[in-house]
Amino acid sequence: MKAWLRSNRVGLVAVAILLPATVGITFANEWTAYFGQRPSIPVDVAPGDEGAFAATGWAVEKTERIPATSTEGDEIGLPAGSELVVVSVRVTPGELDSNGESPRCLLDLEELDGGTVTRGWGDALSEPISFDTADGAESICTASNTEPYLLETIFVVPADAGDELALAVTVVGELPEYLRLRL
Amino acid sequence: MTRTTMNWRHVANGAGLVVILVIAGFVAHSTPSIADKQAPIAVRGELGEPVAGRNILATVDAVRVARSVEASNGWAGGTAGVWVVVDASVEARVDGLDPTLGYARLRVGETTFSASTRPGDGSIAERGMTVGIAWTGPLMFELPLDVVSSPAAANAELQLALDPDPRVDSLLVIPVDLRALDVDEVVETDRPVWGAR
Image 1 (cartoon, each protein chain N blue to C red):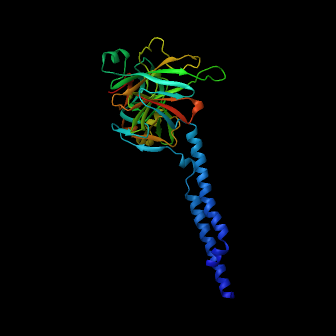
Image 2: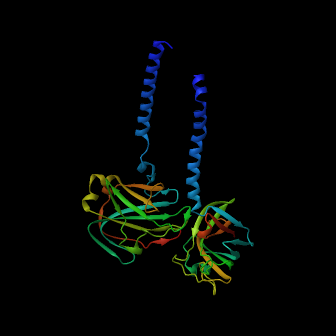
């Protein structure tokens, strides 16, 4: 047996190295592709700070939570047991793309627990509520805006949503990184 | 090396080959197929009890059978068969990025019926779902009369998922005994409501 091991040691060592390496590389490729196509690496910005992302400045100016039980919540038509989260962001376009446009983005709200995302919400622009965006504010990232503008986005969340919330700004060209503005 | 040793080595090699072939056969026959590996993960529940999957929470409150339906939005559904009306409450649990109640089906034996979208906003079928905020309202399934009275109807299953393709995700399964239900002439359904009940 020892003689057999000795005479085949080169092949055995090659198998011992190449087999786990093949498995590892295959897994790494699959997971890299998977995470590379989705917002998986947050670029955190502390509350009150301005973040630079996609050659654009992003700063939360105001965050408001309107309970369904309030007079305003009733007027908006919020569902029972919910709150409306209104986030105002000052967007300062910097470097424009080859078409002279600022970045388009997707906006989501994340609920965090010690930095780990526990739940998420898409914006409530198409929900059956009556909320008027502030005068002069945009409700989505507008590529034609090349000057600083105010972005006001809304989310309907359950009343038990935690206080550790963040606005996630995803720009397709920056994936897998995305901006996480802590509220 | 003697001739006897050589013979034993041949026998051992043959036995080793047989063992390897048996193991290979076992692995080949016991390895899950692609369909098995991608199958929805069934989460079984009961009528009247909350049932939770990865990204869906639902409670089925009642199931009724009728020859016609009058929905809250004024839609009236006549049929040559019957309507199975399911009153349910459904919400997303984790991921609220544009989920809908995309998969609502009633399985009777080997046949599966999708929730009708004909009642429009009188039903919660294909409604957009929000994390933590339920939509409560009816789902309506149009079935042939003989299906409801068939032996398989005693073991019917209501299946709910958010993604229209529920593979590799939770599929809520709630058993329903359709044969035990009376067939009403007409059923009026409540308006779908968004929010806590």
